[in-house]
Image (tube, rainbow, N blue to C red):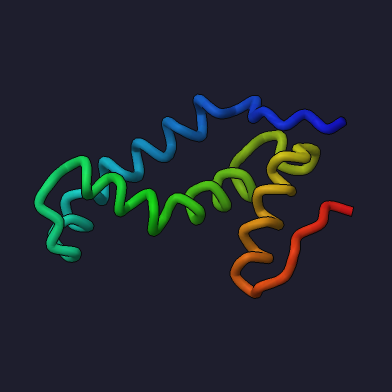
Length: 88
């Protein structure tokens, strides 16, 4: 069975937090979101998949051998076009 736990989760989360902190004020302003927590939730809902795809697909040092990365990216890509993902 493939390992389904990210070995680089702390690194990924640091990248995600850095990106959110850099863009949150503008995101809240553009979307007329008054609160910090609501802004973060909206940002993650809208762009979390993209941050994950960029980190897992391009930045992660284990991207070529990580089964979780392949599974996550396939699930996202297939949901966009309405097909079921497979890792085979």
